[in-house]
Amino acid sequence: MKKGFTLIELLVVVLIIGILSAVALPQYQVAVMKARLARTMPAVATLKTAAELYYMSNGTYDQSDVSLDISSIGGCQTNRDGMGADVFWCDDFFINYIGGGSLDENNIMSGVGDNPSHGNPTELQYVAYLDHSRYPNRRECWAYKDNKVANQVCKSMGGISAGTGSSAVSWTRTPVNMYVLP
Image 1 (spheres, rainbow, N blue to C red):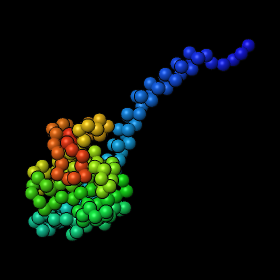
Image 2: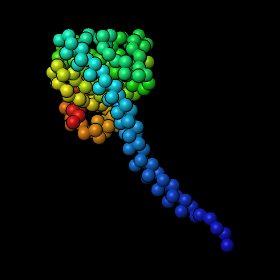
Image 3: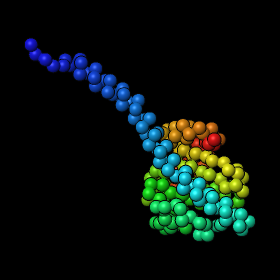
């Protein structure tokens, strides 16, 4: 008696594996992008705390990060690839400090994805507004409108849609869907 699998049995197994892959892969992509975005949040919180301490001492936000106590943000450097002193480049994300401007501009933005200094704008950002801004203590998740995975990440973090906009920052792919985070 010969033992083995019939062609039908092999096709059924391949079909089952294909279905499982089609369901699991998008969820895996969301989990990976969400974990990368979550890595930026403590660094943004540290920079926000430094900016608020500077504001309490001086009555205004620093125009750049030069005077801020940011020694606890390890593994990050400024002014890499000629992108300016108010941008922190970390292992796989960036943080842009926008302080001292109008109330609309007093925020800290972080982004994950391709390195924008190489001409590849990011498609997912985390934005934390400073205490003395138009939206005190507000946190937002911005996702490039056409990136379904990035939009799923913002929604999975409890984001509530705040409309569509465009970023003035050149390394953010626009238009973006903005989500207010809890």
